[in-house]
Length: 307
Image 1: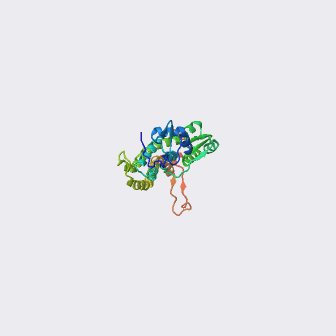
Image 2 (image 1 turned 120 degrees about the horizontal axis):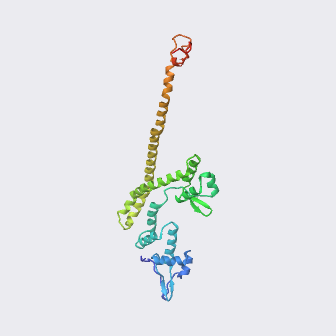
Image 3 (image 1 turned 60 degrees about the vertical axis):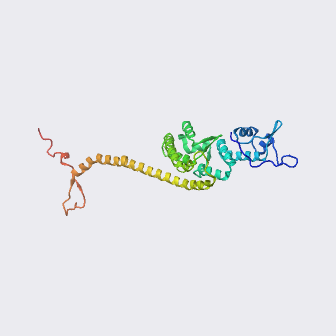
């Protein structure tokens, strides 16, 4: 269990009584806007130092309250208890919390400024019509494109949802679109793991230890510089791949159809050539093309000939 070294110690007056506020566990939980159960859980995990025992009652001080409020703030920002334990341990070793938070924020902050949006069932039915069957809705939730939120659904990325609705209205089956997203995600996540490792590998140089305090500002600046470059590289490669696939489709399908069309019509072209008569130069018909029915198709004026 991790033990924390508090930098502040209660100041005692001449009578030996600790100055500053003291809290029972109920008072501490109330002051930190949390529960007694949480206080005990954090204490069991080593996130919070034990209280000072006086008889059967434990008393907490201002340092406990500060630490407890910090835990609550970090949980609110999405950090796990494991992350918080590591950070608090680093703080006790003299690290600046703002720099530590800056480093994690540079790595984990959203890579898009898109704002999630809520949709009610009627809105979804308007967007997708009969395409949004129960099975399609379940698949959409499974992929995380929609998240149930009471009687509504939360779309983390409204853009992809609206694009899917447009393509479904254009006639592309929604199950096919969802399968495409699933396939794309599988391949793209592997690629993105490699992309992120390009700047995370800077942290790997320190092994299982945190980077030295003096290196943190440089690492944060480096990560913020690389993030947009990684996005540009991904967008460029996706555009190149789409262009390549589109050109391949034209070569294999469109040109093939044109070749087939030419082959099917070559007999008609030959037929037209066999009935073409060049007009006599200077004649009244010189400016017009004359088509004469082929000889083999003309009726014999003398009638059928005896065999």
